[in-house]
Amino acid sequence: MPRTRQGWQGEYMYRTVEIVRDRPQTKVAAKETEVGKLKTKNAELQRTISRWSERGRQLNAQLADKDAEIIKLKSKRTDHLSLTKSKLEAAEVMVSRWSEYGRKLQAQLAGKDAEIKKLKSKRMDISLDLNISKSKLKATEAKVKILEGENRKLLLSLTEKETEMKEISCRDEASSMGSNISGLCIVCHGNEANVAIVPCGHICLCTLCSGEYTSRQKNCPMCCRRPQHTHQEMNVTSLLELEKVALS
Image (cartoon, rainbow, N blue to C red; front, side, top):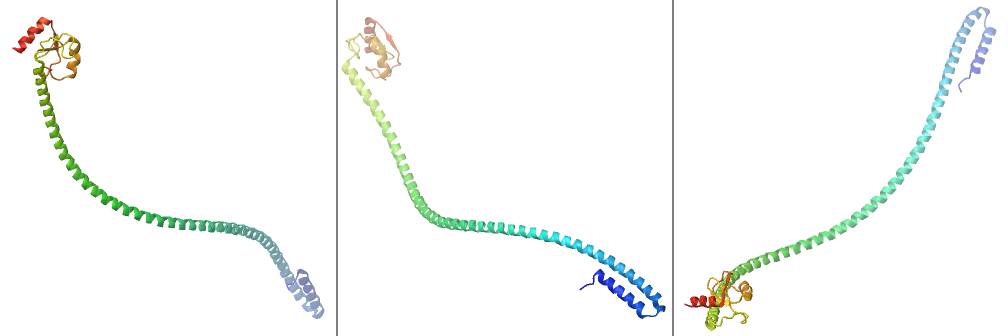
């Protein structure tokens, strides 16, 4: 064990007494000098011990602070580890959920791939049918164009026939009605015919029937000529004279 201050002092006193007792008086001065040196050295040792004691107290205080800091750090580390563990457990749960969700998505994706393959196959069939339909449509359109051309020709022929039949009918009607010598309107057969159709000059309508007849009919009922949608009112004598002129 290291010697204490009292230990050093005791040893010093012991050595001093021993020197005085055992050695001759002539050596007392030298011993006193040595004792002075020892005292000086002892004082230095005391100061060193005091400094080291103060340093020890400071180190102890620093160690106490470090211990407290270490305790705090350990507590923080424990809390941090606990929080990290909780987060890790939550992350593991989340990873497990996402893994399950990924497996479900993978299964759905496989199903969608199968559906896409079916749709592609169906699209190819539809495309083939569409090409066939387009070919048929082109052939049908060509036939329709041919039929439309034939139809136009038939309509033109029919129109010509209708015009011809109307002209024949008008001629037959005119020949059967003569020159409307009766002087009556050929529409109502009651009123006096006093309206001449221009430009043919046939007097076959009354004033009341002329407007309606000329707005509906295209040709004169006597000669089948196209009127100009105008008429001229005359008295009976003038009408008869005009009709005679037309007959001549």
